[in-house]
Image (cartoon, rainbow, N blue to C red):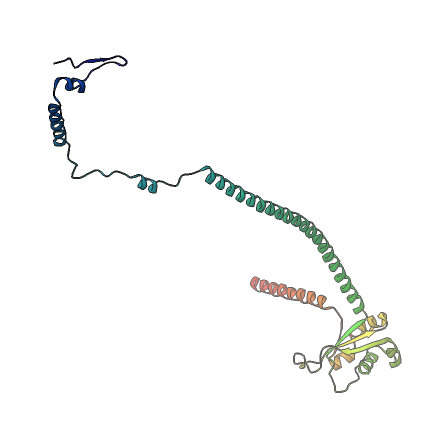
Length: 269
C-alpha cells in the first residue's frame, strides 16, 4: 500500500490518514463507493437526538422589545433644547418677580416715610387739639364768670322769666328795676320744658349780667338775702360741665374720706 503522506510542491506535506488520492490508487471505484455509503450510514446512526426539553433561546425580536429605545444624538439635542427653553422661561419669571419685589420695597420705603410724617403731623394735631380744647374751656369758664344760676324758682305757664328774676334781684340788692334792666342781659331756663327727668323739680335759670361787678355783688349778698330763704331759692356760680364733673368727683372722694374718718372715730371709742 502506498504511503499516505504526500508532499505538495507549494504548501509542503499534508498529513491525512484517509487521503482520497491514495484511496483511488489503492482501491477500485466500486470499493470506494461502498466505503462512502458505509461512512454516511455511520454518521447518520451516530447523530445525537434533540433534547425533550429544549432550552429557550432569546430571539432578537424579543430582546429588541424588552430593551429601551436607542438614545440618539437627536433625542439628546431635543431634550437639551427643551430644558434650555424651560430655564429661559424661569429666568423671565424670576426677573419679573425681582422687579415686583424691588417696586414693593420702594413702595414700603415711601410708605414708611409717609407714615413717619403722618405720625408727626398727628402728634402736632393732638397737641393743637389739646391746646384748643383747653382754650375753649378757659373761654367758657371766663364767660361764665358773668353768669349766675338760680335754683328752685317755680315755673309758671307763660311766665316772663326775665321780669320775675329782676324783681327778685331788687330784693337782694336795693336797686331800681330800671338799673337791673340795664345790667341784666339775658335770662332763660335750662333744659327742655316738661322733661320727664326734671319735671319733678323746676328747671334752673341762667342769669347773664352785663357787668361782672354787679354779678359778684349779687352773688355775695344772695347768701344772706331774706328773699332766698322765703322763696327757698339759691344763687350758684355757673360752672362748665367739665368743672362740675371734677367738683362732683372731688365731692364724692371728700364724702368717702369723711365716712372713713367717722368709722375710725367710732372704732376708737
